[in-house]
Length: 296
Image 1 (cartoon, rainbow, N blue to C red):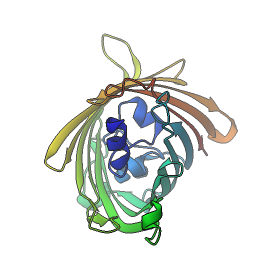
Image 2 (cartoon, rainbow, N blue to C red):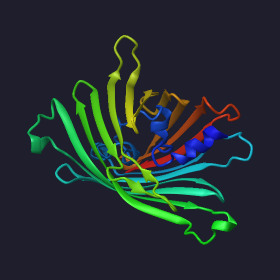
Image 3 (cartoon, rainbow, N blue to C red):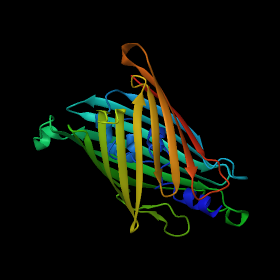
Image 4 (cartoon, one colour):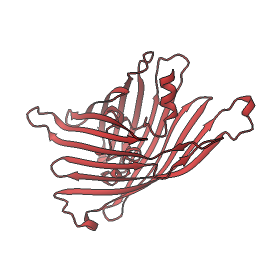
């Protein structure tokens, strides 16, 4: 139970959203190009080819008696134009019913920088973004503390950079919680700065192994003088419609699947599922995540 409580306490810095990203172990900083980007690297929203909305629900640490933890996410990305970039709106929430809830509200903007820094798009496409965030937590206090406010919120922001090279290599950087966000009740309790460096490689067909639409990615996370690594792979088979994903980090192993349904006018419905198997919670048979995404 201690491991679970630590996971929930860190909800503002440990990401439990974005089913595609979770299937890759959370290694998404140099991949982000869809409606999951606001939570991993805001710069990636400028690489979204279409408008996209995503709705996600989950059950964390299923099988542990007496534990009911859920994570939900709603994200929307709206490309404006190459000149004016893209905007995004997102809400993410982790909650234990009757005990605690943590919500994050995001408004983001990103734009390609090639015309500003005079870089050839045939070599690299580079983007930068800013994400304004409002963090809010709600806690149910004991009877002796019933006079305390049940909610506390604070503003902060993220910035991100993403470079996609023509040879398939991607490099991403995200600095989250630039301004320490104090969400404490009786004393200061700050959500501190987190820096993430991401690397990725994409090829429509991996040489020698002939794996189609292949992506491999790794994130290195720097937080409170500690370093952690996340890594994952992804491939699309059956004419690029079925996604298969694997990933992991020190605390968990992840596996994910997705399927894309194409309709008229290039609209698409995507169903994604991810299973995260915690390595430090023996009683649990995994955290389950499912999302529906609509591109139009």
